[in-house]
Length: 248
Image (cartoon, rainbow, N blue to C red; front, top):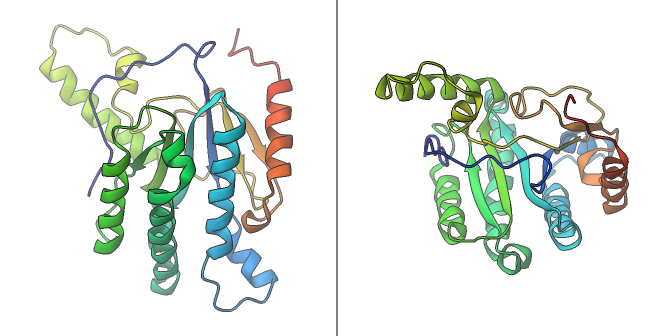
């Protein structure tokens, strides 16, 4: 399952003025929410439900959004205690099982990609559910959902550099690596338009470092289990009101 969805084949990069909207989400604050509410045996159900409601709301009500990337598990998260990881793995497995039968995935033809390079320590049953989810949605032609699991932005760039070097060696007539050619080797070759991070932290923590160049970033204090559809609507309303010039 290493590089579960890594595809070094060329992908067409659409014009930022004509393509749909790509939203990135860092759903932070679940453990702090459980602590705040004195929940000692938090099983992640509230967090999982918010993910489902958020995806359903976006895909049903924002036709211009055609891709969502959610950071479900970072490379650094894999360094947490075994107790924490057991909870995360259980949450991932349940969340992916939810997506397999979720009406919005079926009705909107959502293709689910599993994005990440550190899958070695992830339990076999989680890998099997991930494989089933990708297999059942691989032919969907509607929107795209990227689940970033065992993912790190720096690692993605390093992997793309190594893949680009191999490609250049096979194409010795290419004198210079154009950025469009390089982007084909990224796990997510498309730039972000919106980044939402809940939980009050105001940093990227390594999420999609290459793709975030012209993204509009929203850091909000709300802990993920308390994130509401009203807040989401307000963020997207503000995003639509911003003047995006892409450096021009």
